[in-house]
Image 1 (tube, one colour):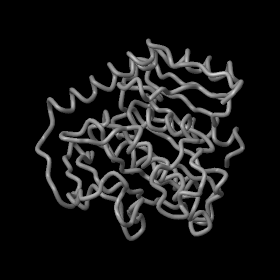
Image 2: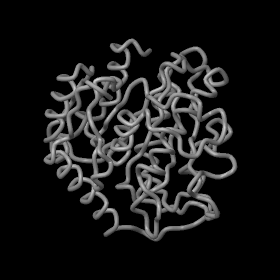
Image 3: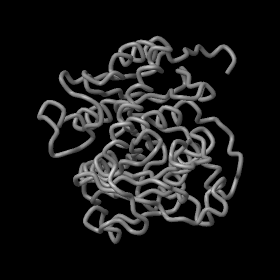
Image 4: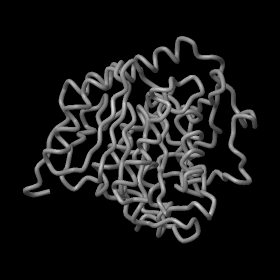
Length: 314
C-alpha cells in the first residue's frame, strides 16, 4: 500500500520462533506414540450434538482434490493431536444465549505445522470462551510440514484460516454473531497463522467457490499466544501494517519467542496499532489451557477477555 509505513519482523524474531517451533516439534517427534486413522476416542472429542464440526468446503478444499484420507490422531496424556488433514473444518462452540456478547473467535491450535494440538490449544480454549459469552470456532487446518505433505502455509493453511473467518461472518445471523467482531487467536504455529491472517487479509481468493468468498477475511482482532507471523519460508514476508487489527501478545518468559515480543510490541505501537503485551516469568512454551498450568499463567485467558473488553469488542 502506497505511503503505508511497514516494518519487517526482525531476523532475531524469526530465528527465535524457528528455534522454538523446531524444539517443540522435535520433542513431540521423539516421544511420539503411534498414530491411528479413524475417529479419535469420543472421550477426547467435544459433544458434536452441541459442538458440530463443519467442513469449510463441503465439496472439498481447493488444493486437496483427490485426497480422501481421513485425519490421523495420536494421544499424549489427555491431549488429542491430529495430522494428515485434508478436510479443513471448524468445530462450533456457541455461548448460552443469556451471556452471549456477539463477539466471535477463530481458535487456531499449534503443532509446528506438523500437527494440530487441538485439545489444550483448541477445544478447551473454545469451551472457556463460549462459557464467557464469546462464540468460538476451532480450526483444523492443513499442514506444510506433515509427513509427505505438498501443502504450503501461505497457499493452504492461510486459506483455511481465511475461509474460517469468512464462514463465521457468512453465518453470523444464524450463530448470533456480530460480523464486525470476528477475530482470531492462535498458539505457536497457530499464532504464526493468526498473524498472517492479520497481515495478509487483502490477499485475493485464488479459487473462488461461492458467496462465502465475498466476505471480508480481515480479523477484527488478533491474539498471538507464543507465536508470531514469521517462519521458515522467506516468502511468507510478514509485515506490520498500520491498518492491522488490534494485537494481543502473550508468552512465557522462559520461551525463546518471548525475547522478540517487546520489539514486536514496540513496532506495533510505532505504526499506531493498538497492542497489549504479557510475559509470564518462569513459564515456557505450549501452556495453552491445561490442569498442570501454574497459578501464575492459568489466568492468561482472563487477561485476553479483559483486553477484548477494553477494546470495546464485548
